[in-house]
Image (cartoon, rainbow, N blue to C red; front, side, top):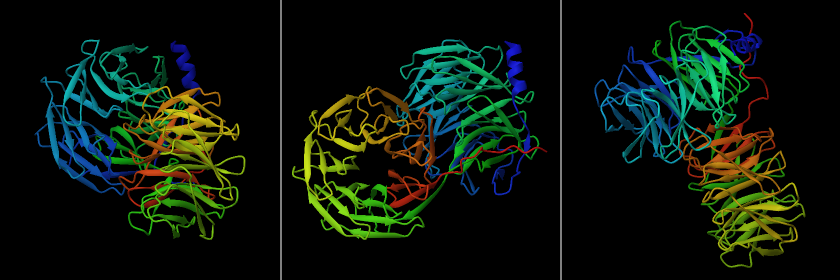
Length: 627
């Protein structure tokens, strides 16, 4: 086994890079920010619900916030010498952290107000903490050899680990819906169900000391081996693969998934930040200051952020293919923009649910609004029709509207009272097809305004999103029916049950692979469905995610809005997911569309804005330069 590993290391092409260095026109660099408190000992860093980064100060006994511009604010932890360690954003909009020596779990609001919850047993030494998909916080107890769960109300439950004195440290929520954790002293990777059932997988090499872990873009769990000098991955079925570090005694430590679909980690002993592809190819980047001891790393809105335990700094790696987001305020207050689409005129068109208007925004960000004839129409979805006009659903008015690129509006009443049209999409037959959320029907409207309706077989199914499939039929989601429906151009309906109950499917689109892709708003997943009806579900990494709309992007990848987590996400046809933070907090992104300018445009329902996400160039990230 050792000979095989040696060959693998020899094949790696590794060049050390002392950052900041850049090729002309590139912006690859590392920026460092000094922490105000001397010798604070920064540990874990995480993205906060307010768009800032938050980190713990082990020796400074503080929780600190750093803005993307580098401004740092510190908040002392109430318990003296508590040694805060892990930190995570909770589903309640607060930050939750562990107090290693204080033997507590702490909560701090974005405004700096603290609440502490003592652990049941003394000497538990809580370390890492994450937000779970179940709406709770989960943490490791290094001293008590347990996995703990705390609700947002402060109720604590503990579960024992099979191996005595295993020393659990890093923890992650896996794509299989279980907890995965690193047993630093037990030399194993543990798996635990939310009910507390535990499995363990021994590492191939003794004394490796697995320390931190994260979910990778390939659907596996990736972890660092502090003493083993390796980065490794474990599949949800327990198969482990290890990759040797190019340099000796690097002490790989924190690890996270980057925006380039690679894993990024710190080398505590090597004084580097490193990147490993999902194939196992490693690149290392030396920090400019010796003895920095980079510890933990997290993805932020504009780069990768890491703590320097020895250097008493926060570092940021920029220019690694991160998409940049611009936001434009809608003129009408409380307009609540929802649906969005690319128009035939090269502009983006959107609905203003709260203002009863249709909006238009140019690629340069100039907006025009057109009031609808019907008061209280509540326009929701919008699509470009085969006739070169924009068509939209008026949910409360029970009408389908048409607006020309010049702004001329016509409305057509749906025959069924209380129809509540929501989704709308062009069909291959030259007509527009729409869902009737309240009427439990699928409707068709010709460019001349003639409407035909077809009843969905399942009563009260609440049809929601709709799209044209590769087979020429229309496919739609049933929010309450928990099904995906298919309607032929002749009006024949077939329904397919979603494996997971109560997921509330919303958006749906036809993917680059010829399959249907849809969002599970309450199921926290993105799902793929073949034309034959086979469904595969992929959990969004962010706990409590509420994916809403989904489209095929100009880059051949599926893009979706994460309404609750305030992110724009992407998923490859193989199921790898990564999310981009929306700059404005609590924006609740709703609809999403690909613009003629090659960017992605989306609506921000609560903050009354239109967002534009500029995709990075299709190039290799972080180019290596020979010295």
